Image (cartoon, rainbow, N blue to C red; front, side, top):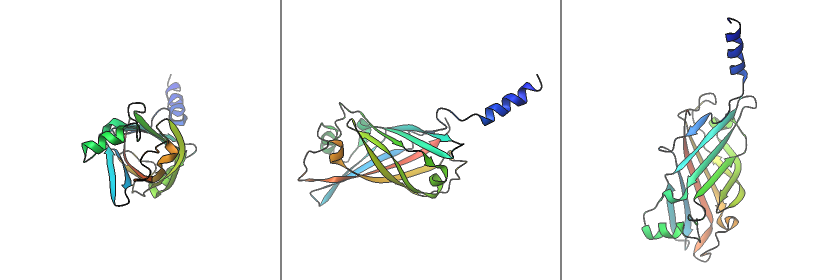
Length: 184
């Protein structure tokens, strides 16, 4: 029995981590978007309903971010604009209540140093490759709990079948996420 306990401890230490190693804190995390209207003003909003996880592969020294954004959780200055962005011609929240981002395996070191994170964004039932720029932070790769990952990127809304009001609304949409990581 005394030899069994150290053997079990060694197996557990060597076993790859499964499920979520860190969670996205839904209370302190947010996502936001902005798009130019008539090339004069900007329509913007922020989403409060963001959740997901960060799965770490210690052997490969990589991590994968999975984030889901609840489209109905959008906050905007104007109730009229909020109704419009939730309507079928923009986010179509009734039929597509969630926006999903999954990163490609990303080097753990990049999570601290910053750089480009590639992955796939699914919005309105359409999945497209995207690249977000991750800002550098002071969190060491071995201690990411409590860290904030700030990502910024731009998409072409027509790639996601958002073709309404093309004369008044820019095709380019800025997206950003501030993800706070917590233990599961």
